[in-house]
Image (cartoon, rainbow, N blue to C red):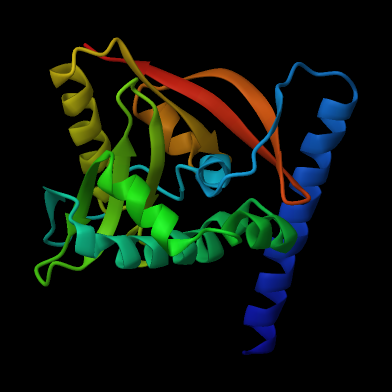
Length: 217
């Protein structure tokens, strides 16, 4: 790694640490928050959610299509989840938080949850996953991630639109989620509103995220 790239990586990590420290300090002074202790891998996923790392459309999209998930998607989607957190959410969370976020997710548990939820996957021409989103029966958008190499190409927007359409088909009044610092700007741009911010504790790490919702037309 060049000196310039090393300097930039160090600066990003330092900025993330300072940002989280500032946020945690504000909560310690008594700002309204909800403290929850999550022990399951699903709740860790919620801490970053919605990662999860998806931003507004700014460049042309490559060829992709949406389809419902299949059993064979479990392992590739878990790999996409880990990679997105490591490469995208690291902009806003410390290495210690990233390590906690990724840890303790059993592949068989991940696969079982995927099999029992409505899940839409964006795939390329080779049927390789570029992103995914899963929706629970009550309107909870649990996992929402776009591949680190395919950010800002309309994939997240297409996934979310499909989620809203499914919620409407189920006649749900709203879609709601726990949204990471990284994904917050994208969700705000897609007509979600912040209900509250909250600190989520798991595996020795504290995560700031946002409870957000969007009404279903």
